[in-house]
Each structure stands twice: as C-alpha cells, then as structure tokens.
Length: 73
Image (cartoon, rainbow, N blue to C red; front, top):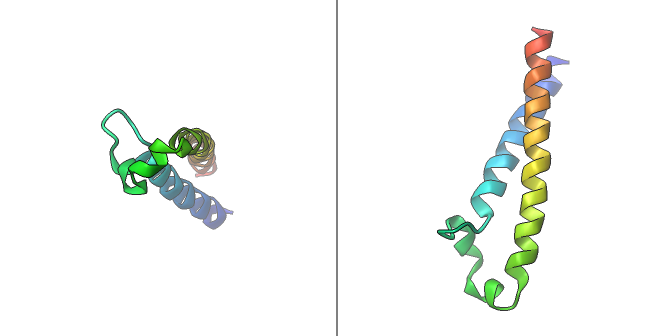
C-alpha cells in the first residue's frame, strides 16, 4: 500500500511542477516555450484553463496522498 501511495505522490508532484511551469503567468515564465503564435491565435487562453485544472487536480491528489502516507506511518 505504501509503494502505491509513494508512486502516486511522486507522479502527482511531477505533474504539479510541470503544469505550474507551463502556465503562462505575468512574466510568461516557461509558458513562452509554446511560442507567441499560440497567444496570437487564442490558443493560449484555452491552454491556461486546461493547465489550471490540471494544477488543481494534481495539487489535491498530492495533498491527499501526503496526508494518507502520514496517517499510515
């Protein structure tokens, strides 16, 4: 059971880090890797909404798996 929770914890951490870095923020961070054409054609807003949902879901999963690991040990 612990191994499964550790796998979930690590994978959710990686997804959380990636989704945060790929969002275009005020300074455009690593979201600029997608290119300026995405912003020009309106795809940037759609991607930001998708990344926001992925970020929220992975953050909740990360917190729940951390709490479960803490309780089980």
